[in-house]
Image (cartoon, rainbow, N blue to C red; front, side):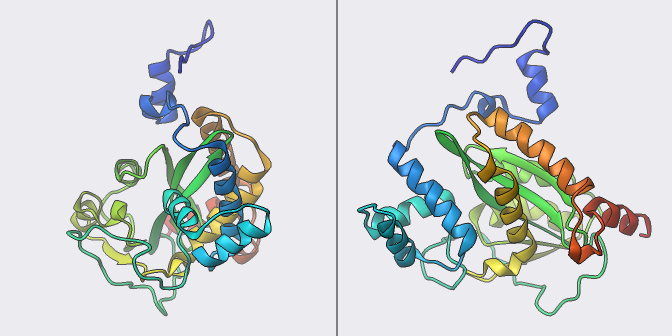
Amino acid sequence: MMVTTEPGEPSLRKQCELLSLNRSTLYYKPKGESQENLTLMRLLDEQYTRTPFYGVIKMTHYLRTMGYHINEKRVRRLLRKMGLHAVYPAPKLSQRHPEHSVYPYLLRDVKVEQCNQVWSTDITYIRLSSGFVYLMAVIDWHSRYVLNWALSTTLDADFCIEAVGEILHPGCCHIFNTDQGAQFTTPRFTQPLLDNDISISMDGRGRALDNIFVERLWRTVKYELIYLQEYDTVKEVYMGLKEYFQFYNNERIHQSLAYATPAEVYQAGSSRR
């Protein structure tokens, strides 16, 4: 794909620096899945957002009721491609790296009453008109404030490590919660947390609700932005998400925050530390 700039625009290198995008991501041309599979992935993503407890069998039945002649093996492959797993415990659906350490879940019955007490992160599938990318975000549990986010065309750990590294410093938070995916169990991700005296917490297998605030964020982003738009390129979806997260943090009021915005709660809480 040829990417060019208009007269007077910054160079592509400068644009990538301003957008915090890797140049390979900017040049990414969606490929690899048939149009039918991309349509099925859209339907699976939307149904999963509504019913995250649906497993392969129920997802297959759902697609069949939509008129698609599809078997469970194909549905399982597409769900894995998207990084989606039912919230109930299901063996062998989400495999961590066998050489990576897994940490216990530290947040059961814990009251999160202040900013920077708990941060957490996760990855979700974001559709394009003829392809898809992956979105990760780091959120402060108490304020719902999105601290940082990143896009990637693959599920490699690098974009997660870089996004967290940009906001990591001693004392930034007490507990950092993730799932047991290979992106988060690699020592390249966990060691910087330990080096900054941060306790690591990991969701139980198949328990997406252990990271409930990020799951709610994904629902909000998809219903309020992604499902309402048609993005063709990584740059377009990046700019759409950038504008949305500015709105989400600074303008979107939350009933659970007494109708304040995440930025108001986070800035007030951080200033008291």
